[in-house]
Length: 227
Image (cartoon, helix red, strand yellow):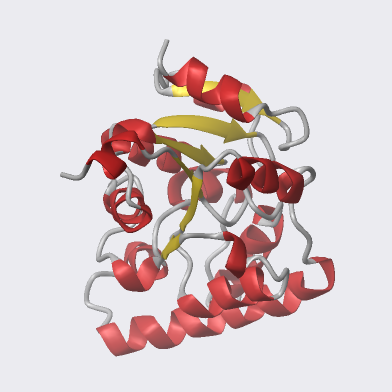
């Protein structure tokens, strides 16, 4: 273990619902996708039970584990294409995000993305907003076998950023994501872009709950994480 990794700090960002306030479009595309196949779902329940899980895991839940890998991939591609079509006219970073990461970089903090999204959606968001160059590491669905609440994607993002879990703060909008951060040994900042603060009351690793990035102070977050 190098001294640099021991001392290096990192912010690790979930992408959907965090970097971009887009979860309503994801849920809308999922509901439309399943409705075409005869499944009528409750939007709130669907989000709470699936946000942060990978596409193939969601497909398996609703279509059964007998679904082949190829069939699952084809269905997931169809759903994500529908999402990008719906959200493209609205693509924008969450309020205060760009300024916040610029301040973080100036403070020497490593920045990483850890998302359950496929590569096509990572490209769509980060390249569409010209943000890819801001991040030192990116980990997505193609890099890990299991989605959240398993900690795999956060641990990989921290490793790629050259930091330890204890020195990493996760930014999330979903309970499954906050649980994944907890299992990874990381503190979390919750964005209430989709769910109210009460939805995260049970988590002892949450150090802040905010509506966007506008009022966040870089140094205060790490001070809170050590208390």
